[in-house]
Image 1 (cartoon, rainbow, N blue to C red):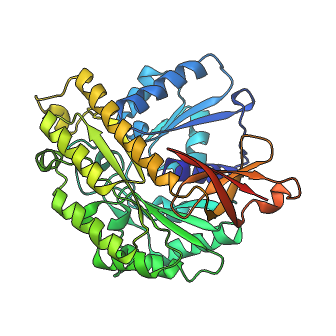
Image 2: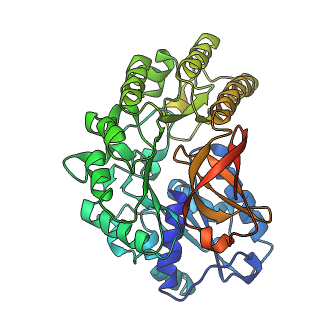
Length: 420
């Protein structure tokens, strides 16, 4: 979502004469678009601001969730910051920047009644794979999570608005669109929810692939499960965070589901789409987590056999209920548990990827690879693929195309393939 928001900031600033540069030395304005979900991410912002302080030329703005959560504190800690803008008010950037030049208020972290989306210009060209925010905010109030406080209540964009943006993205070359939301499958912009929206998007000519992230187990509807078996453009990959394999920890997290619910959802999804690749999030060391609780998480991972997973040490966020609990887990225990979990997940990811070695797979080539004669893209199962291209192909002609490649090798996080 931060990538999407950053792109939309660039779109609206382009209407005021700004263009992107990859060199800070050439910039008149530097915007740090930030995440507040973990302490490490937030502290990296201040580290980067310290480096920017050495260069007095650019105007500096802090946007995103750190801006929303800390407001004036950002300017107190980093006096070189000229502007602080929250994730719901970045459509005001041109006006706010003019106010900064007039030494007016440089903090805007409101939750305006009028949505920002209606104020944003049409998206500029994004490439073969694009992001599209359809929902923001969260009403779940998980005990560990700061998102409801920084992003606000759940809001769903109207279907017609989403389809219009998707059509513009496809016209500019997008073959794949990932639908985004803090709780994307809670989308309620139409009576049939996310499933109905996906079916509407499926009718757009030229849109070959649809994905969505991030979802919550409690909002996986019967219609959405059916869509996974019936909509050919909906890719066979689902990121469905569970966070823990222990029911007692799920209760402490205020997740409002139990492991039996989660596994039943997976069983039903695999019944309609047997090749579905599953991904999840795991937090280790949540307050109150015992060794037995952690082993239950390990057991769940073994039973489900995830194609991908993202795992993190619990990070106390100010103002969240979990941060106030007294049974915090020591850092040493969190480090050890994370190592064990990631070791297991890494093995599962490698074994999953190995099954594709020696096979042909359709890959959407969306970027130039790091090596000469190499392009990169993703499979339907969301695997990153590095593709060697023979000399008789023109790389630029292949960018944005879906091609069949031959998979030669597998690593835990990617595949290597060739196109000859």
